[in-house]
Every structure is written in structure tokens, then in C-alpha cells.
Amino acid sequence: MITTADILKARILIVDDQVAHSSLLEQILTGAGYVSITTTNNPREVCDLYRKNHYGLILLDLQMPGMDGFQVMEELKKIETGSYLPVLVLTAQPDHKLRALKAGARDFLSKPFDLAEVLMRVHNILEVRLLHQKAEWRAERAEHNEQAISASELSYRRLFEAAQDGILILDVVTGRITDVNPFLCKLLGFSHADMIGKTVGELSPFSDIESNQIMLERLQGDGYVRYEDLPLKTRDGRHIAVEFVSNVYLADTKDVIQCNVRDITERKKAEQRLNLLSACIANLNDSVVVTEAKPLDEPGPRIVFVNEAFERATGYTSAEMIGRSPRFLQGEKTDSTVLNEIRQSLVEGKAIRREVVNYKKNGTAYWMDIDIVPIFDKKGKHTHFAAIERDITEEKAIEDQLLWKTAFFEAQVNSALDGIIIVDSHGQKVLQNQQMLDLWDPPAEIAHEVDHRRRLEWIAGKVKNSQQFS
Image (cartoon, rainbow, N blue to C red):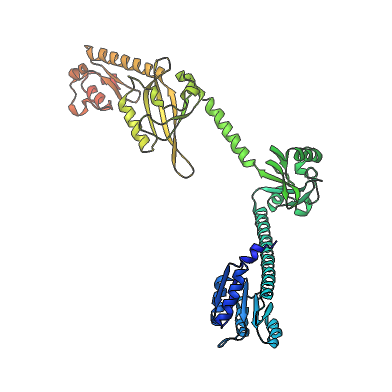
């Protein structure tokens, strides 16, 4: 709707070489409430002024020196390429009126001016002009909206065609397939024509889905249906697992059903491998600990996983360990030198294996053989450390006993009055006492050889019955 206020705010340009005429028109219009009026006595300025201000109306004198009103209109047509030229001509020549209208003017005013006629014709032309502009704006907006819709539809179609998930479009009333994308056709082994017009349940791969009517009722009630792990058999006999999600949405003015079908076969296999790995780790007799890679400074990298063997070995539950640094298991008998070696390897992101003393929840010290390896993500970034730990407390105790017994036996051999030498089955010396060297006094070059054969040959040559050494 065009209001009087809209008309009075319209921009008006008065063009007349006679200052008296242009001033009179300006006074008339200003007195009637028009607020945006420009005047010029130079017709050559009109086109530049129009480009800058896009006037709603030009009051144009036809007879002007240098450039008349007809010439001005011809130049304006080059700017106003549409069919509407907002010109009201001013003339005292009756024969100019028809010529001006043919040239594109909207109306004319006769000189001398009549006040009522001026106001009426100006009002009418401006009202028509504003209505014309509004119609143009609506047409442009409609065209823009249509282009936007077309672009949106084209974009959706491209996404639909290129999607790496299967997509079905169903009629919301019948549940029958109205469209299917290429990915799903390839996945299932059906052509586009094979699927159009059928319900989902009529296609053999989806035969395990509940009936079409039940699915439609659920969609109409909830607007959403999801099958988390749906087993499908493709046309060529392959078995795949899919995630099937259906939604109701508004397309233009009509509800439609979109079903997204995602092949999760590889994901299921990965989950199975992960579950198998988790089960293996959980049932290992060795402890497994996984920590973050940083910080290596205090308080140290935090534990993110421990297996059941670790819980049995330390007495701590998983809940008590997660989020803490494994350093709290260390104590007074933990060798700081070994810890420094481990830390240096962690800093360098290298694997390391060492034996170290830790402490259980009840305060008992225990020995463990710990093998630490760095873990990297797909981009090669160091993210975690994994440690496999074996309780070697009993082995260390046996080792200590063996060392004590060996030391005791060596002391017995070395304190014996007889010369003693012990060799293995290959003739390699295992142990000999000083009395043996003092008794036989072998040459220095063979006295301490590991291979005892030369020494035996030398001794055999010193005795009466060398057959005893053969």
C-alpha cells in the first residue's frame, strides 16, 4: 500500500532553464508538503543527477537552449533501461504534448501553471511510480527466491547423488520409495528402477524390518525410526551390517520420509577386533598399564587404563588408578638410577625394559619386569605409553638364593687344600681354585684360559700315566 507520506518523501527533480519557472514549481511543491526537491537550470546535468539520486519524478521543460527536453529524455532512456521513464514534461506548445508522450513522458503540464493541476498530476505520477517500483521489487524478490530455491534444490541433488551413505525417499502416506541415491543402489546391487515404487520391506535386503505399516505408524507418531545394527543380504549374496535411520521432514508443502542407510560392516569388524583385544588384555597374567604421553614432569603422565592382572598384582582397583600417575607405586627400595633411565627413554619416545621395585596397596614391595613402549596415532603424534609388567618377585628371590649358594660353593672350592678345576661337557672351564695353579704352576699364557684343553694337555705331559687325562 502506498501512503501519502510515501508520496511526499519521493525525490523530485525540476529542470527548467528559466529560474522563475523552476522556483515557482519548487514553492508549489514545498507548500504541498514535498520534502525532497532538487532544481537545475542546466539540462546537461540531468543524467548525472539521475544516476546519483534515482528520482521518483522529473519535471522537465521541453524548450531549453543547448539541449532540449526531447534530447534529455533520449539520454535518460539509456540509463532507465526499463519501460518506465518518470518524466512530467513542461510545455507551452500544444503540439509538443503528443510528441512528448510518444517519446516516453508519463504526462504533461501546460504553461502557465495551474496550482491544482500541478499538484494533481505530480501526485498521480508519483503514486504510479511508487507502485511500479514496488511491483519491480516484488518481481525481483520472487525471481531471487526462485533462483535461491533452484540453487538449493541443485545443491541438495548434488549432495544426494554424491553421498557416501545410502538415501531413500519415501512417500509419507504409502511408504513407497520415490527416490534412491546411487550409493545405495551400488551397495545393495539393485538398479534405480528395481527400487522405485516398492516399500522398504518388499526389497529382500530389508526383509527383517518390521512391516511397512508399523514403521509408518512409528514415523507418524515419533517422526523418527532407528535400527542400530540391521543385518542385510545384498543381491549378490554378501552379508553387510547397516545403521538405518528414518526421519519425516517437510519438503516444500509436503511431508516426506528420508531413510539414511549407513554401511557399518567395517565398523562392526573393528569393534569385534577391539572386543577380542580387550578380552585378551583383560585375561593376561601380565599387568598392562596405559598412560598419557605427557606430562613427564611432576605429577607425571596419568593412567587411562589398567587390566585385571594389574588390579590383582597391586591390590588397587581400576577406579583407584585411573587419573593417577604410576609414580605413586614407587617407594624407598625403588632404584632412582633405573627410574632416571626410564624417564630418559620416555622423553625420547623410545621403548625401554627394566626391572624395578614397586609397592602394593598393603605396602608390600615387589619386583616387576616392566617393558614400556610409546604409542603413536595415525598422524605419527606420540599420544600414550603402554607398559607390560610381570611380577618377578619369586624369580628374584630364587636368583638371590642361587647367588648365595654359588658364592658359598666358590668359597669352599677356594679354601680347599686340593687343587680343583671344574669344566663343563665341552671342556670349558667353569671354576678353578688357586691351589690348582700353585700345585701345577702352568705357564701364565694358559693358566687362566677358559678353554681348559691346552691346560689339560700340559698337565698330562707332567704325569707318569697320561692316560688318566685322555
